[in-house]
Image (cartoon, rainbow, N blue to C red; front, side, top):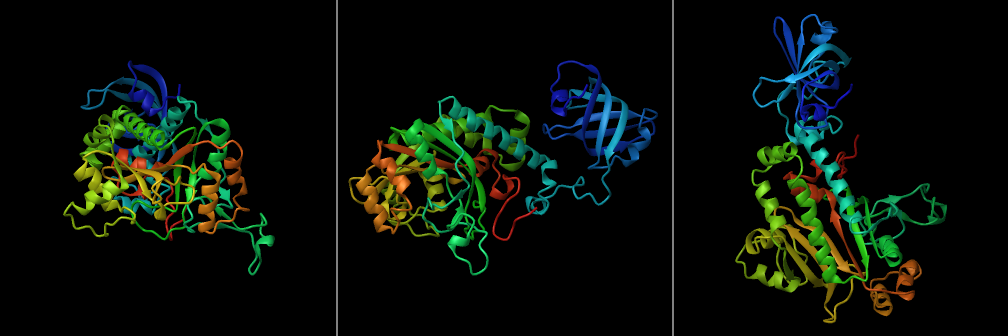
Length: 451
């Protein structure tokens, strides 16, 4: 009867004739028996196996070095060892796959930089196993959150002819021969990897009311910071008959719910993060869950920063983007809570955001959290046809290319709003891991694309 290590360690009673499979973490030998520590990745813990001399397959024990894969049959018994409830008394062992002496993940600890060079092996370590189990749990929590609120899950395209953000930092998708033109390309026009599923998501929200997307997005930004990657995952809900206030309410509820999921989940993975990655992690996450988010207009936020007396690396001024250091000051020093900043200057925001009556700002919002800065960005969308057309004209956007987007305003327009949450930044927040490269299985950054 096959059982995972997670099932075995979580068992409530002894059992006979179990089969466990996994990879050897350590092996210790004595005259009459050997100890094996086996982990199969289903949980942080490893199962201790006692293999007596003479059992079936014992002649293979010397080959069961760190990294080797094994299959063990035996009986689960109470363990006299400290800190472990169960151990397995083996009746047969089998080596499935050997690992040579140059197996790179030996007993000594390796730093994240070293492990990034072997992304194909790093999930076998305690830290990265915990990170990617947490990533899986959080992804399930995302879908559960929206399903419980009757949102429809929509798969928006990865290849697009639209630039949602207007940043121009997009990866081109082409089969065009050298010196060829658009007509010779696969789609007959210039296409890119998407930076957001928002625009396509709006079309479905204007038919199905509440929808969300959850998928990979891409930025060809030559950034080497710990918070940026060229490929990352975004969660983007879009809601018809919704204004900026409702958008901010849902974003706050969403961040709190995902944070609560991690706090109330299995202790072993979260315990590793709070003991070895960030000792203040639990306190900070409880802070996020238990306190209402502060709300500041962009104008108020700038005034607070200007009067702070702080010496920032980036200047503060109305009309400038808030930088990470500004965002962290607002959350960690001034408000001492997560902060939602709203009503940003029109000049620093994309064309699709709803223009406010003051003629200077748009109905945009960002959710800022301690330790990370911005984690959510969203807005109420411009639903008024003529105002949207004027904005597009001013920004040089073709009505022909965006005719389908304008149709949403021609045919039964409604106020609608949405936001995007960076999944990797959320993972950084709940694990305490400081580099985005360490919360995505295979990071894609400038100069890095492998394996």
